[in-house]
Amino acid sequence: MATYFNIDNIITAREINAAIINISGRQRMLSQKAALFALKLVCTKDSYQQETLRQEMLAAIDLMERSHNGLIHGNPEMNLPGKPSKTVWKIYFEAPYNLSQKIWNYITQIRALAQVKSTELDLENPHLKYILQVSETELLEALDTVVSQYQKESEALQLHIEIKQAQLYQQSCTATATAHAHAKQLEETVHNLQRTQSQLIQAEKFSSIGQMVAGVAHEINNPFNFIYGNLQCTKDYIEDLFGLIDAYQEHYPNSLPAIKAKIDDIELDFLQEDLPKIIDSMQMGASRIREIILSLRNFSRSDRSCKQLVDLHQGIDSTLLILRNRLKACADHPEVAILKDYGNLPKIECYPGQLNQVFMNILSNGIDALEEIPNHSGYITIRTSLSSSCSSVIIQIADNGPGMNSEIQEKLFEPFFTTKPHGKGTGLGLAISHKIVVDTHRGRIWCESSPGKGTEFWIEIPLQPSAIMQEAGSKN
Ligand SMILES: Nc1ncnc2c1ncn2[C@@H]1O[C@H](COP(=O)(O)OP(=O)(O)OP(=O)(O)O)[C@@H](O)[C@H]1O
Ligand SMILES: [Mg+2]
Image 1 (tube, rainbow, N blue to C red):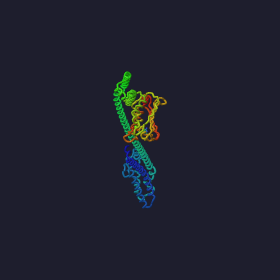
Image 2 (tube, rainbow, N blue to C red):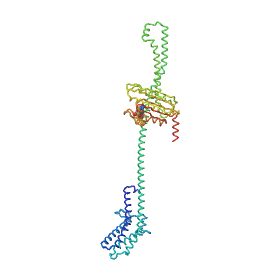
Image 3 (cartoon, rainbow, N blue to C red):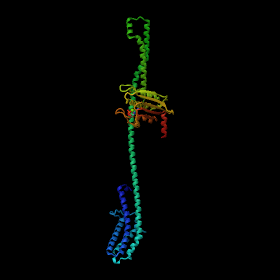
Image 4 (tube, rainbow, N blue to C red):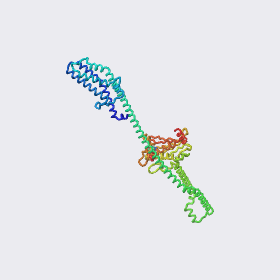
């Protein structure tokens, strides 16, 4: 049936069908016409008219003969394929109809009548009697039967063509849908590849920053420990030396002039008063350096593969420390104030290095946004709290920068979406943060912002992401 899949074949099948119906119907009409001519021929006395009628009757019967042959054996000029169906064949060649035989008999009788001399033509002519009788009964009945059979077969063929066409249409629809699905799949694959690539880039960037920070912290830590550890000793020794000087002054109140001059020169009283203060401030500075080194180490924890129970505030603080230079006032921009409103949070099980990466991305974006406003009096608020059901912690990081319109907000978490100048932003920060919060920690991250009113990012981390991850896993 594949032949009907071709439009030319469909048109040809329809034309052939129409020709068969047309010509088989014409057979019926020709038989009736020939009978009418025969009757007129017998009734007319005008020899000229008789001759015309004879010609017309013979022409009709010739056409009937050609059509009959065409229907049975085929005739390309008439567009007839021949090879009738089994049912049609039986009508033509088997009882009760024996149509072919009846047609030949009829043709023979008409031709015989056409040969009868004008003087011998009358209503009692046996050829005429035969013609009039069969043309109204058995021949007519058989012709009607074959016409209606041709009709039925044509309708069946037509239906068949329509079904095939419908199937063809359906196939083409399915093929189109499959092609669309493949195109979509391809698009998704490309998108996923881009996403993975972007995640790799940022992860790589962060892990190298982390490694560098960890390396620097380690290198500083050893020499620093000599200073920090010896400061207290130095202070003690100096106090001892001051005690010794005091003892000398007490026991030798009248010292030599050269010693007196030296005491005046170095302003011994002031030195004795000031040196302990200097040592104290050195101790304070050293403690601060110690904290910084601890924060750097905390920030750069290499925790890609293991979860830890940590204090989130420590992570936020160490991230702020890394960003200290960007927060300080400089020639280009004023200071960015940090307002902290830390809630009472339990330790949470998480990948701290990755969450630090999220804080880093959001805080950097906030600073970038504030820097867009010249001479801003910008601040970033960091608020942490437990959710009302106590099942998760919430971190809100807000800035009073320029905010975002809804168009930007819609694309915020898409990889490579950036409004920053070329070379400044890659558009990966929030895409990665989204992945870390949502995929890795089963949390949520969203943003509230309006132009001119600043931006607030919300991060929600479940207290036991592992339990949630397991639950999610068992549901699948
Ligand atoms: N606090 C904010 N205020 C205003 N716009 C913001 C803020 N945070 C993010 N955006 C907008 O969202 C965009 C995407 O941020 P994202 O951190 O993903 O990329 P980026 O900062 O442009 O580049 P990258 O972080 O890779 O260096 C930014 O370009 C900016 O337009
Ligand atoms: Mg960013």
